[in-house]
Length: 281
Picture 1 (tube, rainbow, N blue to C red):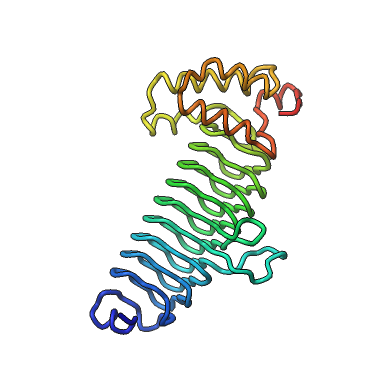
Picture 2: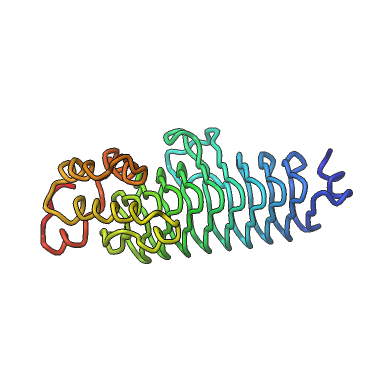
């Protein structure tokens, strides 16, 4: 069925002022608002709503039941001087809310060619997701968060307003980063971090509570954080000590695995910063 036939049968709704390429793939229930621009290689899933003045371009796939608000620019070429027009993709999952003037770029050849966004995320106004980022499910980026390229954000992480995140940083599952922070090293899963540069201030207790994790799991995470980030151990020694209380708890195993895989290093703890203990972590 052509775009015109779908509109005529009211399967999709496209405002008369919108510009939609005839080859764009729009599923049933899609709504396109005034003055929006949808280019040729875009695919939009069932029930997704695109607001006024949005631009969606490139090889972009958007899942079902997303809501994209006024002025968002999705799929424009990466802000990377090495990008030479190679084929790349932007893949966005289901039920995401992308607020006003958000920008999201596709991948580059140097980063695997894909930017991938999970499902059930919230991108608040003016936030930016650069090329080759991998963003999990139920992630929240508050207003004006800026993600540089090649960043990984795991499920249920929350990044506060006006935070800048350096290239190649990883933000762990259920981490919380306070507003106006500068993030230049990996943020561990389940951690609360804030500062310029960001430092670890303990376990994200509110996040653990919202996730309804068992008391024993929360207790072991608190104990592990004390060993890893609030003792005099080096990080490798701290990991070895924390392994003794992991006891097949998946959250602890995930935390330790994340730390072992760090390439940029882990954010320092607030205690070590205050005490002037700057050992390599």
